[in-house]
Image (tube, one colour):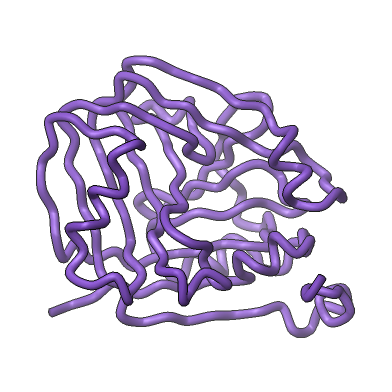
Length: 221
């Protein structure tokens, strides 16, 4: 069975630990995968990578294509292989736990892709130039809702034993088909969507070891 491969620069723990310096260029990152999630320098907003193009959803509810020379403190990119796929007439964020029951094992991480019609989508996005603790940023970030929109959810499901790298459970971003609405996915309801997930069998993990701030930041607190 072919499996998905994930490349990650930084990690869930480095981002939550307060490391927001952009330490990889987008064009360098995109060599490693064609779909994924991340954030820009300063933990600015939300990055959605779909079909090899990176989009930035900001805290003003606007989406743009990211330039090749922009940098990121965190990005997870996947060479997505859909080991399992099915159509769902109804799906919502409250049923994601049931979706994970379809995974052949809970010991692997999975790439997730869900495409179709969404009757309601709520997203959130961080402001630019952050310096506060990450949880404080998340608590104050704005949320946006759109109804009756087509689009794609992309992201990762991670088991607890990999939570330091990817978080625990689902970490998903959303992008509308018209590329005008997208960021971190908070909740959704959907109809007639195609669900794909791919077991991640290969992990390439990179840390910005030459960055002086990374070398001295206390990530253990």
